[in-house]
Image (cartoon, rainbow, N blue to C red; front, side, top):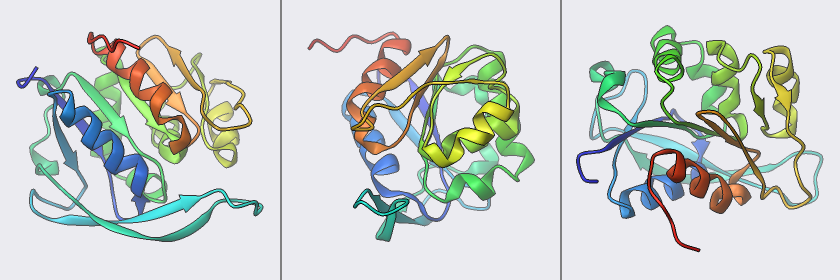
Length: 195
């Protein structure tokens, strides 16, 4: 699997767990994960934010870590990757303004390559116009974007641990869904995880 590459789209204030944990899990499984950010090169970092669910009207936010960029954004070629991961946090709201980001997402969708998106990552999918007719979920505050983009909303369970698959698309509401969406994403990539 070492020659199989996965692209991860991030930006400053990406959600810490939603970038770090999938990066580490997919690397552990033998994939090469290229984390990229518009305007950044390999060796740069983005700041992360830790979002938690503590009984407030929305998530709380705390400073996270510096997350390493492992590949130059300007060098991304969709054909070189077997899958795409879009973590949530605050980064999706502004990286979706970058036309190359949207074209990358459209390229994965057009080639039916597996795409995993978590939390606010679905803002990027909506902006790219790839949700029409899809069943998916997201952080609840993103529901209007998802529905307006033509998707069917997938209800979130009480623990935020469920995930949905529709064709090549895997979505989850937040980082508590990592075990479920990562398993489903890896299955779409053609690997089996024995439970």
